[in-house]
Length: 388
Image (cartoon, rainbow, N blue to C red):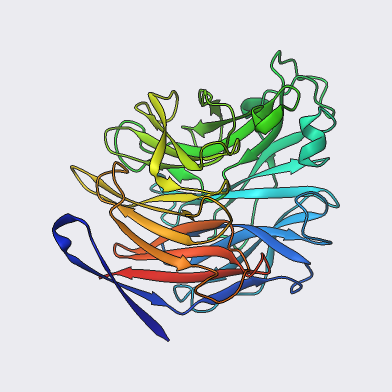
């Protein structure tokens, strides 16, 4: 079933036609041996297959515990999905926050190298913030389109700055990072310019003892220029409470990171712009056109042109509750967001079940896929939106 919607662009009152395909349930709570599925991420492969990742939570809906990274594949643009595949398993502890990306810079590997960056943990976020536990950073690779995966590679020493970790006595940092998380959502790779090939993973960490209004949190990123051999940290976002984040490429070697404000005082998205591929930040500001209740959001470059990039952004565009999942389109690299479409609103659906986290993927230059949590976190849904 195809749903057709009409809306108006502000510029010149041009008529913009959207069509949304029917939704497909990719992950459903209670199926496949897991009580709950959370934290979606999605990528498009060179052969057109889609890989959808999330956390499979074995025993309950909580962030910590027996949590695996699981995956499903679609070979028909999201109409149907494969059986469940486990990508990362940390036994009875946590493996979460999958951040996948496809490296396409090796000419000898036409299908690319798939990286999935993820975090492990031996205690809950609340306890780790108190210094009673450790979060680590890992990645796995696939050279065969995600059918098989390498052993995990621990890069914690390169991208984390804990003061007193519990598992490795060789750490000797003076900083005191505690909680740590990738994205959530996909990682990104520069496809143009000076930093072509750089893989950048948006992230966040807490530092020192817990503070009120989550002011111990700061967003940051880490990157590799040599396909995972070495990693480097970006500068921190110097705004207390900056938290879950995602990044995308802009023209002229720039990068935009879009960030959750965990403080909750300003119910808007935080935006950071880097002119050097995500190493340092030239500006950090609240985007007044992107309301947010304090939740995750996803961002993606849809089309890269000589003079401008077209950017898609998706979040819960409500300042009071997790609702009103909205996709916005910017034709001027995020300066303005003059086209928008509501993907899900509980009032329209005649229920009070909130939506949740989301991720975006480009299927075609005018077709965007949205993978998102729905029905009070009981399902992860895939749908597509065609911009006519």
